[in-house]
Image (tube, rainbow, N blue to C red; front, side, top):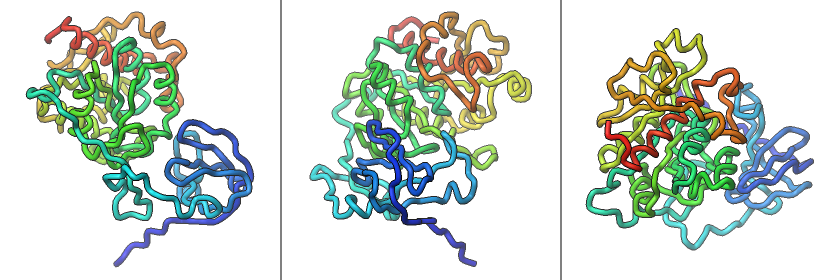
Length: 338
């Protein structure tokens, strides 16, 4: 039996433009909240006739920032747009959303590949801000992997970290797209970062982790993809431990099942940071205890929220991510070899 896979496309009119951000527009189509990616679908103005994908709202799916539609095509000013002359690869190939982008190769790294470059591997997007806070002052590249939102421009966190100069460049690894740099593979992205001379790389999925509720059916397994590529190419992968609220710590012996599942797929040597003041950090020999007593001060003013919980509700979640960033800094500075 053949399953139906409708796109749930509807046409309507832009009734309001709420907010314009770099690479992202929040608008209303016939009164319903919608987002548009102008670099992908062209500019949008009030009164435009558009096609929108309403599937998430129709099915009542929970998305980051609540239910909203996606602008699929602008029939007023988005037809006949020319691909960039530098386009080299296809993003979302052979799908209705196929688009040509200027793909980037890996550059010319040294003979030792990544040359010991620290690569921090995040399983959820809300870990990115505290990791980057710990790397303040260093040249940091952000690499987004599949497993959550695919457009890098959807992330308010990455946008803010770029403004604060906590991230120097953003890289999209297929199927992700709409970043400053587009790469076909994780390995290519890491080698490109090494060739650019970055001090550290932070890899993560986009906002809105996808999953089926099963052990290996979730986007956090991108951690293993990044860690394996970094290990094989001579980098030093650091897996960010997902430490969450007290109830979950008791249920999973201190660490989320998402992290444990990803670790089962890591083929090379990895390290993990654990806040020195948090009990329970002896569960894995790869754990390195890190002093994070100043993490709240260093992270002040950054977006810290995970599953509707903030630093007051779930401090160790953010402290553990900060610890991973601090460990990356120590590895870069040669302060620890454990």
